Length: 90
Image 1 (cartoon, rainbow, N blue to C red):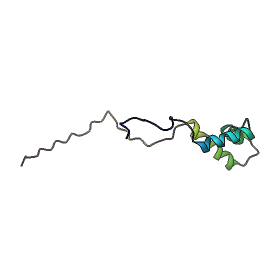
Image 2 (image 1 turned 90 degrees about the vertical axis):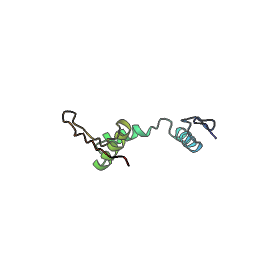
Image 3 (image 1 turned 45 degrees about the horizontal axis):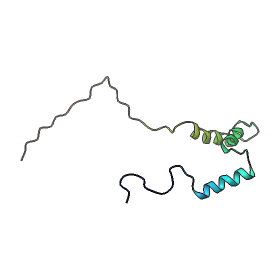
Image 4 (image 1 turned 90 degrees about the horizontal axis):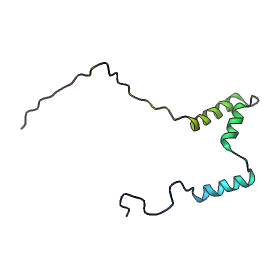
């Protein structure tokens, strides 16, 4: 059993066999294919339907920008009430 650290197996970031085989097959068939570039080209092509172009833009945005998360905002200029509760020991 590991003692808090990795002791064996694949190195971090090593693609599995299926993915490596798929990448190799794509490179053999289409040597200069890049799906991100293909999406960008579709997004900029005015002859493509607007809904398809919008989907391309949304997909590309996931690669370029982090997803937005809701964040609680606290105004530091207003003071929060401090509540002190005194409890008698039993």
